Image (cartoon, rainbow, N blue to C red; front, side):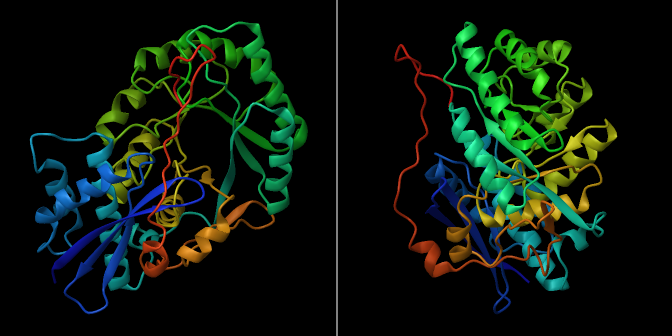
Length: 379
């Protein structure tokens, strides 16, 4: 059996731009879908998928680890978000193919699920308006979610005064009030803060009892992460912008975070996330995959969540389910308790409407953020 073609597809959803990859074989009707969405860089990722074609076409799709190693080690230049995302999409599609061949879900191929259902949380997006967050919480609760995540930070500078802190606190207090004392919420800081500002923000919102603070400092600075870890009483979550096990090693070895959030579409695919999750388990760190994009990534994340012993919560984007249902056979809908059902095979358990996919190729999604003085801020 041989791989005959790999094809990238760029699509624009109501949330962001997405990149999918279809891997075809010489077995009639046997193909796999992967996702390698890297928002705002879709053309770079699609080009990187095409660069992998001479390394992948002609290979046996059952030799997934051999193909992974060839894609990763094929050139002098390794890693980085664009190249690793392309690799991730192909790897995901190969797991889909192998699952279809075996008539099993990816979770079953990995050794079988360790849980009966998957707890999910709703990503409520960015806002600076406490009232808007109250409304978004109400929508999520109506859908069945018991945990939410919010982005309450403005376009901060490295140092900010009391007014910015008060604004963030007001948003967090509104979310806590809307949830009550029994439910949970997390704060995503999008890597916008310096270590000093992150320390101040964590101390100011601590009384609202967030489940974690996510990406509190830029991913380029482990020194900033170490400093915050020395002061924070709230668990710290990192990892959506770290790629492969090598980037996670220092974070895990130094116990700078209690939760890691690798993205299956960017960090090395299913093969690599299995390894990262196992490393995290060894250090007593929770595995909570970053999962904000399309339905193929969501299906892969669901399979990993079913399998990994140290999994806790799966991120879910609930605001584009109608669009997702037009594109995909898998739509992540939680039950009344806030759980997703176990993945259904074979493979990833998701099929894509290719005609609809190719109709969604026009758009532009370039997120930007500016400070009050016009300078560039981190988005």
